[in-house]
Image (cartoon, rainbow, N blue to C red; front, top):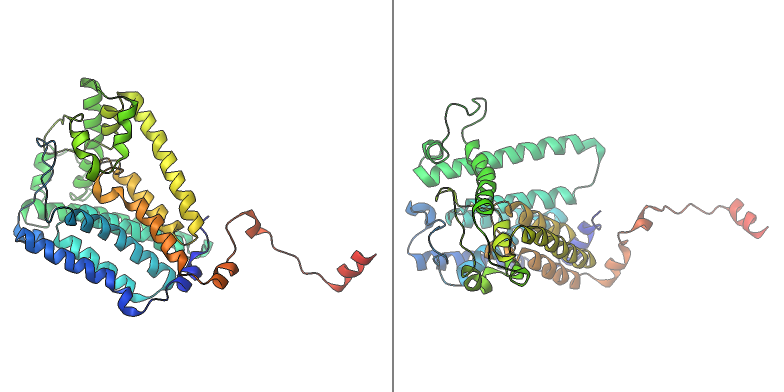
Length: 365
């Protein structure tokens, strides 16, 4: 169970209003400069620069280094804003959340928008009081939001590929869909179905046909952010795809080639568990970053289905940001307020019984 963070978050959130808006202002300025550097607003240009399967190192987009920081920082900052809203109920945070999402929309980053929305749902639900009365309503609400998110990914995919929100001709063509697709499902679901199945197909394709040359030492490179390791990894990682336009292959493809085969897959899984548990211990000690950390960890694990989220720059720093943010918030909590909050342990469920006059007489006897 998570520590009782809402009250602590309210105590830690004592900044003046202009400081609460400073982060959103800086990201807005950063994206404006990045768009000016590119000479275009990506969503309006009608041009999408996606993953190049023939390039060992992807082409830099936007201002070097700054663009990577903007993407990685804005994803975490949006989730952090949702976490602050969940703890304080101040509407300015949810407004800033939508402003950050709008910046990512203008950047034509639908996947990153999905991360922000998914993370926001997790931290808000985690901060709500647990009540059996509204549990069913929450489950239905989560399912509806998830369905809308999946449909939104499909609509965004249609627009990015054809310029029409409802034109599914592109996904029908690249996904080789025929009349066998169930008619009672929306055709926009084809995007998500393709995204979920093609990474596993590409991973199996590589495992069955290619022998890796890596070893246990190189496996560690799979957990180093590509900002620092992409050149070393590019020399050892040559991924083959069944078709060039479906180029996701799960995060385990890096472990397979760098770790020396199937054994590298299992070692990679063990290292993931170790890193996540270590970060969870640190986040729990802050007492205000538990929900934020677990939301970021969930994004890491979900996106690992598509690519190595532990090394991809957009997601590699999420866990680190969550822990650092938690320690920073904890420093702003008055010591008196922190002392009044019970720590998460088995003792929180032990309710002391009142001592009556009869009990005192029994003790004396």
